[in-house]
Length: 69
Image (cartoon, rainbow, N blue to C red; front, side, top):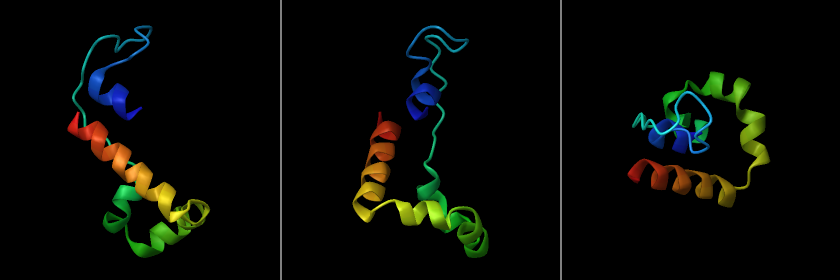
């Protein structure tokens, strides 16, 4: 989805076919410091535990690459 938000619909089948919106998008893991800890623990705590540290690092790296273009 991050690429679709930035570059447009790659399938050229939807309403955003070929339309680059240039929107930045973030993975929820990148926003952890912006979310109150009690909310994070309640809403994302279990999901975060399911992802190994290496996988979390890969997600962050991929999102940074997408935003750089």
